[in-house]
Length: 228
Image (cartoon, rainbow, N blue to C red; front, top):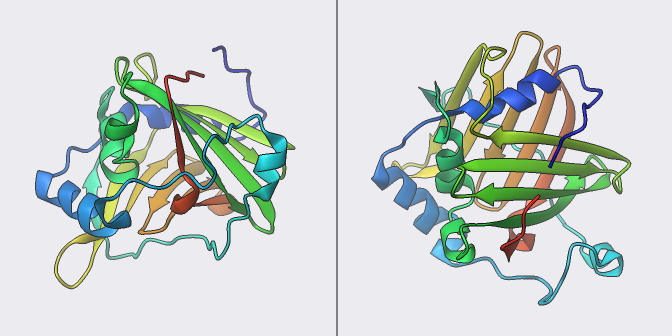
């Protein structure tokens, strides 16, 4: 798929997020997956047989009680190295641990439904285990605005990145309860934040948040074998 050039002030940043990742300890990953993310159970499809192209079905999905996520200033911070496949691994481990159980073919699409301010927001994330790539398409306000970019890809460039890191919060017992990947360039930034029930995609320009897209994990759907 050839991505068209987007009219965004921070497009170089979102493309360059691809390049990095942090390899966390196995115990931390296990704690997050098993104890916090849906108690280790696979998320249920809210409507069996639902297809992304089914507009009528899409309208019936109404995410509720979604609020933008924040990560504490004292969260544990680990620098993300710029290396192909590292972000792919971290997104799988921290944000979509059910990928390995739902994509038997090694690749597929994750569809999510949420809110941006007072309007509907949707997203398609395409994962490919063979190339360790992740492609994101986020749709705002009934697809009046679409942001498309790679989170990881073998041919991504890293020159525009100033800082990138993984943030984690823990509860009183020391188990991870929230995680975030942050990528910063000179004038813009991009964040993905996840807690027990939500994932928040945050777009920042000139130090100000210009868009949030918050998704409820209970509405997450997996489509094995689909590609961008």
